[in-house]
Image 1 (cartoon, rainbow, N blue to C red):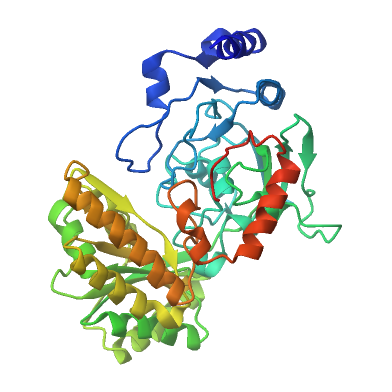
Image 2 (cartoon, rainbow, N blue to C red):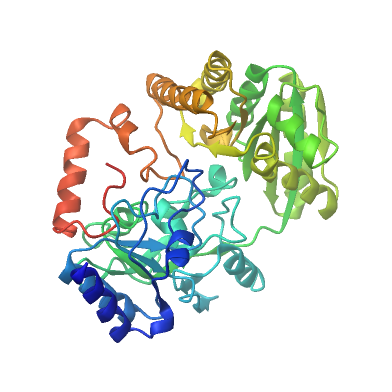
Length: 461
């Protein structure tokens, strides 16, 4: 208790008192993220709002001195327990480090602080005719720092890649308080090890990002979305591969299963066809002159793959209607039970139908509902399972189903995360898809960068 009091006292000396929260209700508020946990088990000792990289250094040095954990938090939108404490410590809140430092139109880069909201960044670069593609469904509230920590993707990852493809330079506060620079402002860099890829997706376990320089690309001149319905999941998956085989690379190929379609239409009516087994959402973009050609080719492929109906957006209202429906799946599913969980598993595209049908069979086995959506262009599926955590039997069935879904994913040659991360939620399952040698090297890297295990401990492995 004395050590904790001394830590709090030192934090308040080094930062303004109003930026150090220690009241019980404040600590409870930051004891969970968007992960639908059953109950709060641990509270942070303090929640600290930082405004400069120098303040981050001070907090980290105090954490190192007192040997207490530091857990970074942006908007807290992650769903794998990546920014909650396991055994006390300091929650480092970056919401006040939210400056867009520079948008360089000539170099097509943006330099930002970690608390910048992704959606705000996209709006600002859009004004200059530029484009930052990573677009997780929570981009209206999620932060750049969080997306770097989890290597977020989104619907457009099929064509444009994920966060790791756009980070060219980071300033990182290390566990000893030093600041490391990972890259440069240049687009290409083959000078030594690529440290960017080491920190992107590391969930704050190796260092704390305090500034990021991101690659931008020219904004596509035009875009359009098609929604195609199928009588079987297999037909929908075959259509995905057929589109790719024709050398057409849409910005997005997303998926909704029957339950997702019906649940969205029930709570957020969007004129979806609820009698279909599956739907693909295909977005095309590029030069205006190419749009009709792309549309015609894709429509022809969809028809050849037994699409029973195709809706095409002809204006912004129709475009937004389709995408709002797709992004409403989680919210709609949450209305079915007191709690809802979402997951992130990914397999080679050739195994997609096996994964979707296998997840459905597992949930039926345990008498659970499931709504499935996903970025199937790159093999990603998000099973959304509504659960009543107060129902002890149902909760046990959910945990068994979740484990079997991971077993199935491993059997199909897949992995447990394409864009959400591992956090604490999947930590006990990572061995199913990552071999012991790889895990041992990961632990050695962690030990080298963070010898006292103060940076977001007990996450990933």
